[in-house]
Image (cartoon, rainbow, N blue to C red; front, side, top):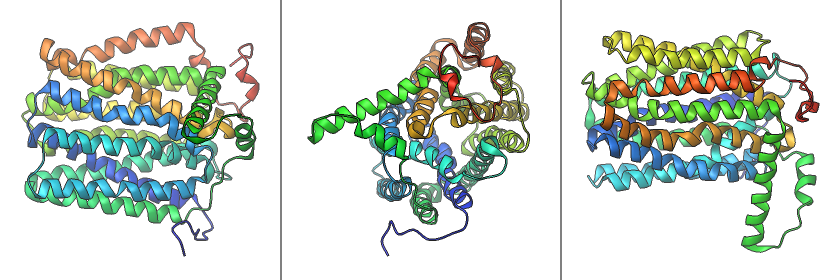
Length: 438
């Protein structure tokens, strides 16, 4: 039996959830472990924290569109098996660097850039696989997406709790054990994917690929991939529904990703004099809120999806204004929890709208554009947050994302049809015409 040999099982979706849960458990661990290494173990200043977060996101952003193009033309199951096997290697290297006390800011950045590059291919493949395993599931795409997001955030919360409180209990054990846990978790992802049935590329997709006349060799493959990426971007531009959601995600990523990755850990460190346990509790509140609202969304039919998306995004942004006034730590956690509740509504709705509207032949590429739009503002936002903290202070910097969101929200309300998007079943692909109503 080879790595690619499928294992028969009556349902793919539960095994997808097992793999997704294991994958996002590592994300939860990493969300505490990596910022803790930078901010507390290496004790870098705010500017370097911002530079680190920006640098480690760039490879994923650059490679995500190529990852989407690749995922559209391969068997997703076989492709994910190889990617998860590769993913398990860097954490072993991180373990030896920490064990030999060989860690530095540059080496940690190199490790994170390596993992970010691999994730640029993993994320589009996992997103596209969700559509494959959801076929025939009761409740439609909204329930499938909501269930997957609830499981994802639940696993993240478990990882956050384990990592955060382990660091407080035993710093040396935290340093040495968790890279190994992350490595073995990726083997767990590989095991779960093996139980999923093969997911070959769509036949319409293969016809599209055969239409490309390009030269062979490396240059020819590059030209072909760029052409495929261009097709995916073109599909996003042609759909009013998809492009408007992508636009909103791009702005929210620009405004709020830096807040999550740079601003919040530094608030814990510099305002509340906290450590890894407080960072874990903050992330527990944030992602716990996201998980709860995602679970509710998966069980409730929402007709006015665009309106729900816009209101959830606005409410979440306004919560940050409350945090500006330096409430007690318990109230800070409460505010972050409500931010997560609103964020889960926005994330579930945006993903549902795009996943349902995307044609299968271009699904992975459209989802990679969607994910990239969410992440593209991260490096810029992280850099800006780092320098703003030095210029105007941490608590004043908290007000910048909500102010920017209000401007963006008003623009989208008056100049797009996002507010009017509803849950039309089935999706009318005629809406790709600019003359069509939303």
